[in-house]
Image (cartoon, rainbow over all chains, first blue to last red; front, side, top):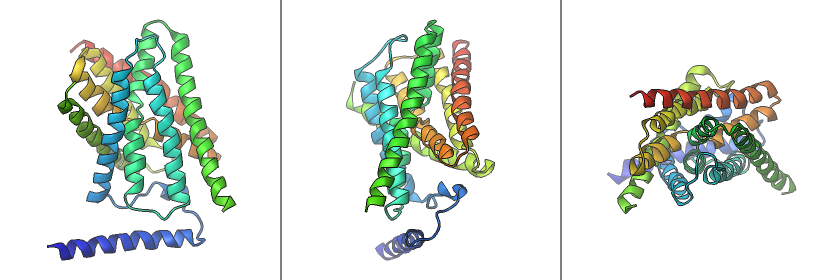
Length: 169
Length: 121
């Protein structure tokens, strides 16, 4: 029956838009605790995370397969996807939460899905472990430090850029 | 590498991302949102699992699907960095530093533990 489905979708987007237009019209920003509260996980949210995660994972896996490395070489594929994903996540989160009206699927699709699927913590940790096992503490330390500094800097940079663009407007 | 394997990478990667969303949400709502425990639990549990896969010394498509696709998509670097950066924006410097150092140190330890278990299975 298309009628009830259409009306429930309308109600849902109405609620979301209403909540955000209140926030966008000069209400104070939500406290930190409220920041990560997403629209209630419905089928659309989960489908968006699934689709984004599938794409992000495909890109990361393709790079990892195309450029295999050894335990004591710099893991460029992991390093690259992590920094790119950090940059994109900083962009999406800042722009979607602070600039654009919140949609019920953009953040799950682009943030939780694409960026979460594209970046990986576990692979980085196992790579560091293998470097340590191979006795290459210098590489392990350098890789960990470079990933954290570059990942952090990417988010800091893009957050500032997005906010500056808003102020200029 | 067949089309079927890459389709599997996508399906498993999507499922891993959905699992991350749920585990993060459950842990965060149980522990409060003062500290990003949700991401920490996701990343440490994933590090144990990927260490386990490394210890089992499986390769080829099985490693691609179970390691790179499943565990790789379940864990996240980008959210870890975002939450650390947002903590410093709120002048929660100690928590931000703690989030970075604890994740890194326990992450390597978790991977070592998983690899040890995997090597003895």
